[in-house]
Image (tube, rainbow, N blue to C red; front, top):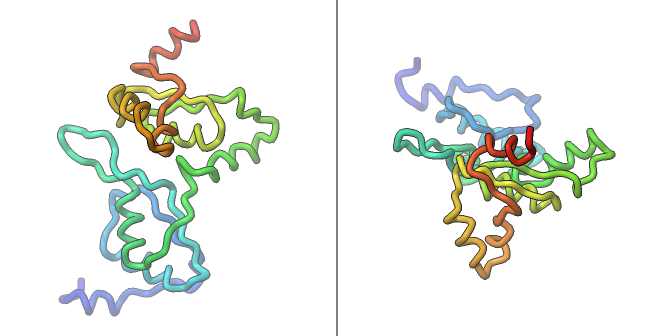
Length: 175
């Protein structure tokens, strides 16, 4: 290990073949990875992709569990580049499903999830029915607040249906 961070940086090499940086959930995210991601993105031809921009996961034992959003924000803060977001709530993920299943009829699909701003919004963005499972990040109070909102972007977070837990789905479908 180098004695100073400048010595350490002098030993970093970049692969000239890298053509994309993909930001995702990474429990091992660190300064070296940030340095490399930002350095690769100095090349305007290098793609910047992100799996999602979720800020955090549901609280576990009073801990805030950071999601992919903080990783994306760190890279964006340095590079001033915005990623192409491939995951929820953006359309590329559903477009990929549709390309694999061209006969898929969105009118016969339902997006089930536990997050309003990713799962439910993905459904709404792609004209799918939506079902929120109340065991995740959002709850009934959130739904009621968004129903009352005058902002269209918040009204789009209101699911078509909701249930307390995924286990209830089987009962509703009589499985």
